[in-house]
Length: 227
Image 1 (spheres, one colour):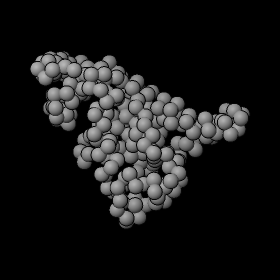
Image 2: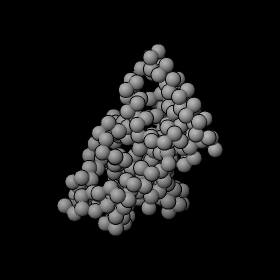
Image 3: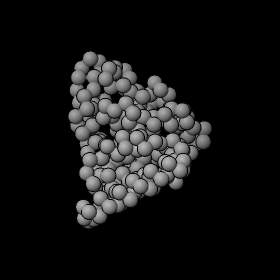
Image 4: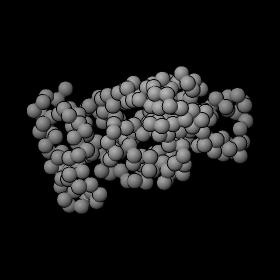
């Protein structure tokens, strides 16, 4: 465990490094104010330490890498989980043509929601933009649970909560257990949705995780079956 003063010193050094990247235009998009706004999501020195480690690791990852990982996660993780069951049922005799048809079906009957904390600038929305703009996921498959209808989910087999970063896991736990949704005018919590739609598989998918350990930040896609 790193003591508090070492955390503070490490955070200060990381901030100076990040500001240098911005000032030197090595990072072409973010500004210092945007950096600070994002860092305000993290309250303790330990949380900020995780955030700075994330910043330092992701500087070398391009947008094309992120898109590739999204594609890999959807089709090699979530879709392949469904495909394996179908392969077993067919004794592994699915043809390439049938496989493409199954992929299309998967793409059409999934639904996506961003993990939301009420901040319209939150970065989970950037994941949504990649899914719609770069991977061809229809905007109609993104669910607005503030005013939705049961017919929006009747054909859904995979409901995916997308996020960019998981640190302590507090946000997803809070979102899952306390987020209010409205379906057919009926107000309920998100964690009650399985009662209405028992056949839906629910996944939490994020870009980066600390694996719940603030000193082991890794770049990967974290997939968790909630149900």
